Length: 135
Image 1 (tube, one colour):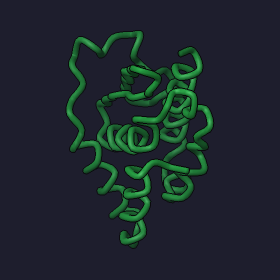
Image 2 (spheres, one colour; image 1 turned 30 degrees about the vertical axis):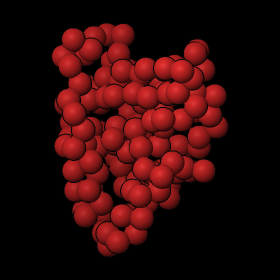
Image 3 (cartoon, one colour; image 1 turned 135 degrees about the horizontal axis):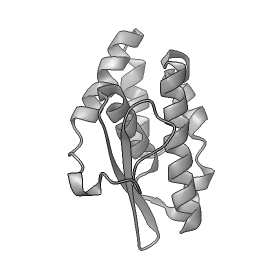
């Protein structure tokens, strides 16, 4: 089951008729995130496999998973915001059980992202899962 924050995105997407509106919505989600401090944009937080520059900064406190992220591409920054809605505030033990691909299919994002963006999204999901698994 997806988080309430992610379900709110799903509900918003149901009111958006075409991909262009959904694309703008995702970008707006990214714009609404606080920027990541430049000191956290280091090789250890950089996600390989993305066409654009992507940094994810995970934090696990009291068994709860959270992360912040940033990108130099607005659509990717929006995808980070959607991933945050999906994963943030989950118990770290539940992160691996999230079927992100299925959840993104509900949004139609799997059909409308370029292959490079899809590869980058997979790389971000794998980073999230590996950090949680190592905790």
